[in-house]
Image 1 (tube, rainbow, N blue to C red):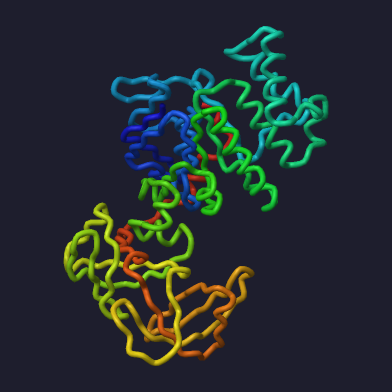
Image 2 (image 1 turned 180 degrees about the vertical axis):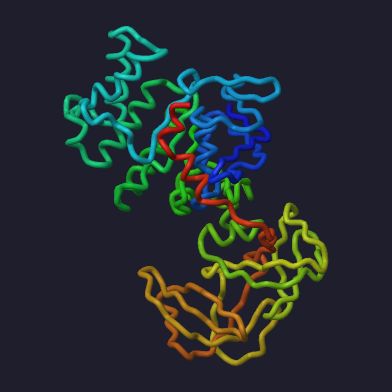
Length: 388
């Protein structure tokens, strides 16, 4: 459905070329809800705008529904209005002088579509009904709440009957409770419609909840792609481990590998961890052993530690509603762990910590290179670029 090959994009900032996208390759299946996740400046919005045609890449190829919309070999550029896409922006981008009906109808009446009045009315009524906006059709859009305005923006995009829906952090301006409600609605609706969706966010919780697959981006590159549960349980790269959820990263060096597991020498001693084949770190190579706070087993007593075990001292305790979060000092390292609220320990308590190898994962360290510049992401959001 959507294929991107060797995509490059750079911005000129004060006479300096800043790479926003660095040779990206990506394939998204028909009907897939695909999430681009990463911190500010990683290139996710630039990528979305290149798909939409609001930015012109430096090189590469973009194919939507078997139609090439951008290529440098041969030279080809399809303008945004002729691409089979709909887009929902972070800022809603509704027209304040129009009512709800006209906000949806205007793009169908003007420009390249120029539909007849009967077809416009049919499409508008269809999306109003789909999103529960019938009663608001004649309301000035400025009288609506933020959540209602975002639904109008979504209805306007769906009325175009796009092959691909692009969404740029559409819920980030709403309060948390409304975000949670709407993101569930959006995912259910897109799956019901079978509409291919590319969704940009920096919110890891949002990405894990709504994405069929997630691409984690850093410095203009895709670091790892996978299903939410795969990225959470088996991050292959330090960037993913630090960005998705909370994870203890214990630095060490690979001693040897055996099948799907590796043994690493760390400050906590020798640790055995699951080793994804894509990580492929040879013996002697620097690595991290990652373990989630909830996957550390906590015990008390003074028995000598066994394999994948260590002793430590509780330094802080925090109540987090459904459990307790602890910080433990183990030698020179500080580890975070979570336990059920019935496991109540006081600061100063001596504990035994056990790391089951199946819940430990070998992680590749981040490359020593400069991070992407926020200026590139900011430039990609500027309205002036939409006119190109």
